[in-house]
Length: 290
Image (cartoon, rainbow, N blue to C red; front, side, top):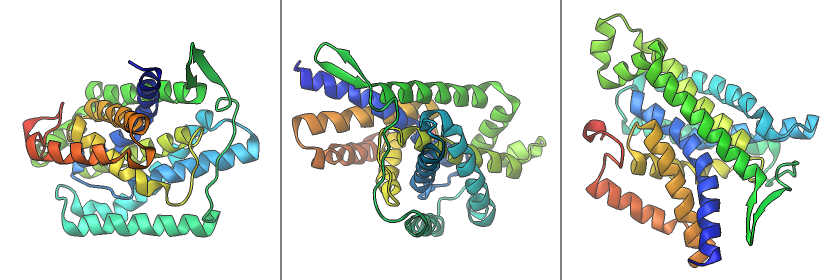
């Protein structure tokens, strides 16, 4: 195995961890409420801008302030749910998809007006340092970002599986009417789950901007990644989607190393078609998830 392949695999794992984190939020909204939030990428973009401007204003590394971006995105997501998405819970209709696309476009245009169309990046203390393992080099920013992503996904998994709130969310996802019959307030739980999903997007953005430049259109390229990671990992599966995100990162980096970075998404779209055709519930999802 050549050094370039090893480098691509390791880099893909680190980058894929953050892919997996924001894809987890996308999967959570779909798994619980059957909401395909096409504005999810724009919430990542919002988190990136929050981290960027906090860094410019205070000098604090965005890896430390990522939760602030998560809170901002969760607040905006709550408003979007109450105003637009709540009437479509449980049914991914064409109207819901069109509303999501419209929201995404509005957020893109708003970002262009507020922040300008140019691409912006930053140089923090983490992004300028590398771990050298012989000829292999890994960015400390990406290593720390991956560790944060793993920790956050584990916390979300624990929240959903070990707490009363999380178990009620799973009950609603399995059978909303039955959950309501035993006294669970599905409307309030759905609002909380959607806010959590959007918050994960915002946190991901705060982490991602530490080593990836931001522009008003960056979210457009992230939604396909979240969709592919969710389909590979399993519809509605938090852990499966995170693993799917890592796989997406590795496939991207390997394709760029052996073929071309301009074509690194082509294998992903082929894999998406194959999974939808032959294994629509993904690697870790339940047969009924689709």
